[in-house]
Image (tube, rainbow, N blue to C red; front, side):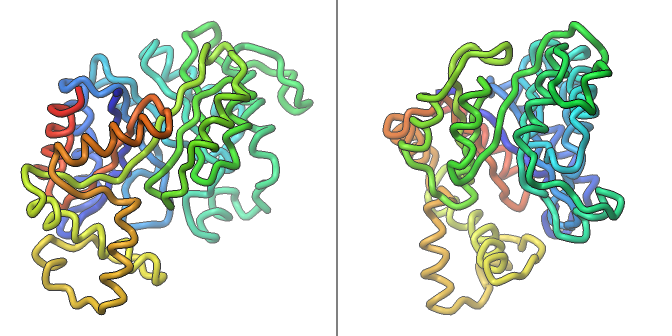
Length: 330
């Protein structure tokens, strides 16, 4: 199984945003050393919880700090950017790091209503044309003349560079067919809502048409994972994330607690039931247990790669997660 990394540059209690980005760099360097296949940076706006607001910029930095691991966006939120700008950014990245850049895109805003309008300079943001925008960006990246009248009189430079891999993100299955017919990779965010089915992934494979960006169907699945040498330690480290998601479901965005604070956090019986239910989207256990579960899910669903997002409070514990999984699966 290929293993990869998804990072949101989480800002844990007592840390600053700059710390979170420096820790993303450390994680990329470790992933490169351990043999992880790729690392993606997410895009989040209007939040003090995550520092990853400019994943394309982070991609450039991480590519310069590593040698073999693929780097990219998981994903850049298309609604905020012109297809021409997307094409020029990722062609530039690929010119600097040929064969190592991923153009991963999403259709969500990645922020609240106010940030959406701020990013569009107060104009009504276009939300109905995401697939058309993706098509235009792919054509420009591939040095083709787009169908869209607004973009067919220009080119995206630099020209004739190694193509990045192109990926479409999804969390409900709605984009499976769209990714397939465009001949791009399909990335399913299982840690969003846990709604992955074999039917969704098979739908992508059935509709896949080879393209300049990808010759055969490729699927990666993103999992939230907390693991450690023992199950007890994994449970201890997982509790802050459990409580963060619990509060998020109640409409509260709170800083990630320390494990000690989370251990002592008052929970109702209903809260405990909700946390247990959320374990379908937050995998917690010792390394062998998690590795066995991921292998079982790969066999059941037929994906190619597991992409791991992990947010223990300390950077030391977070790096341990990726070391342990590499030991078991790489």
